Amino acid sequence: MEKTKTKKVWAVLPVLFISLIACSGTRHNTLSDKEIAEGWQLLFDGETMQGWRDYNGTGLTEPWHVVDGCIQAKGDGSDGSGYIVTDREFDNFELYWEWKLSKGGNSGMLYHVVERPEYKVPYVTGPEYQLIDEPNFEEPLEEWQKLGVDYAMYLPDKSKMKVNPYGEWNNSKIVFDNGHVEHWLNGEKILEFEAWTDDWHARKNSGKWENAPEYGLANRGVICLQDHGYPASFRNIKIKELPRKTKEVELFNGKDLHGWEAYGTELWYVKDGLLICESGPDKEYGYLATRNYYNDFDLTVEFKQEADGNSGVFIRSFIPEGVKVNGWQVEVAPKGHGPAVYMNRTAGAG
Image (cartoon, helix red, strand yellow):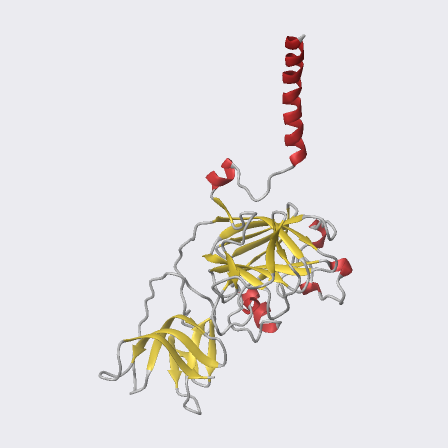
């Protein structure tokens, strides 16, 4: 009899073990061997906020915490606060995440966000994949504010959007591949466009970002999550970096100032295939800047100085406001007037 009982016990245990695995559900915030081999990396470990910090900060004080294996915005943020960013910067990537909003919730995923004291909020530099509970949002929404948009820039194809209601999980993906951008929602591509084209710049300069000169120009930056005053949950946040492609770019076409933007009253014009600058009426600082950013490069330029003026070429530069340039400058000045290179120079009048 004892042997019979023992056999029965061992016959039941395997069935019980299989049942427990089936009830446990899918494991979240992990990578499969296949994903690891493909180069995917987790941005959230499911247990801690390691790898995340305040925007423009060194630690984490914003209203975010970990609940049941999810990064959760408590809903205490506002337009001017509540943003957290990754410790690392990324340029080309596939970024996947799962998200769940509260009723009427509003949040977002931003990328290529630049951190500097001059920028009080991340959205003046980084594009945003908008996350919002449209049916229950308390205020009327413009089309460019709705779910899945490239915020205030490009609209998704509504016919391809299948959205689970607030309180249920959805998944999204952003692909940024050397300027080619895609937005995905629940397995469907809902939007794609090319960054930094004439069309892109026309949209940037004629809408919400016309007074945000650095918006969307960076081709590398941190990933950012937004607490916009509503609880929101995120899990399975993972990224796969894509290779950077190199190409030769002609910055000046010899005909006009296409691809450049002027700051200040200095005169810039093209004559006989030459790019010429002259002092403006108030003889103040003036700059002509490429409208696009560049990472690592080999820059070649020819110049001829026709008077005892002062000029130069700024690199690794940005324009936070007004007529002001921050960056490195290779000086072009008469012999004996100043060094050849200025480092981290700020010039101009605000």
